[in-house]
Length: 263
Image 1 (cartoon, rainbow, N blue to C red):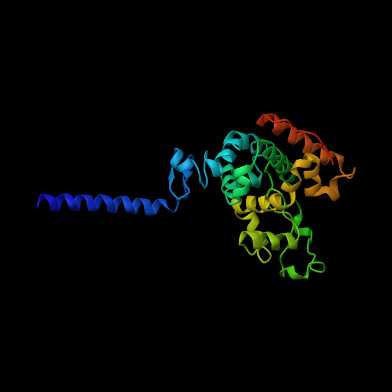
Image 2: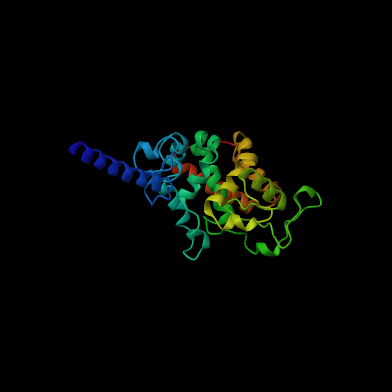
């Protein structure tokens, strides 16, 4: 009889533990908790270490990245935006970390200089994370299905800049969506409806277009993002603004800016 009671108690304990772990697998962690590689919320190396999906990660996958892009670093940028900015209620440091962890090659090898470079461009593109969408973007077409017939623009949809790197043009939305498993050609508005997806589109563009020229200096990254509009003397004020942000973030992160800053 006593053995039966003990077995029943153990069973109930295990059942309670199972129900909690199943619930925890939804992750959706509150602020300050890490989402582990297995989908559980908590703190410490088992949750915030290798494979950490979101939150204050400190391990291999999100760790170096999570250490570089600290909450303080992120806040120092976004807090410069006006309180009325839509982006101030949209972009978060955790959404950036979550997005970056879907690009493991980036997350596992990123350096402080690369983060300074990336966030300098984010700052210029969306004003300290103030904007989610391009100002007056709806008045611009950005549809080129003549040269890109495989990416026919969807009726009633516009492909103006969205997200922290201002993804633009139908062909970019199409290719980015294919890579991320989202139909952004038919639903470009998704980019400005979800902060993690917004950062993922920026990272897609970064990994494919900007990262390959990082070793050529900051100026090469300006050219990769907006060269035709800013480089070769076309818009020196914008170029100088990007360089200024870059120098600032290099200083905050303790790295040398390196050579070839202008384009």
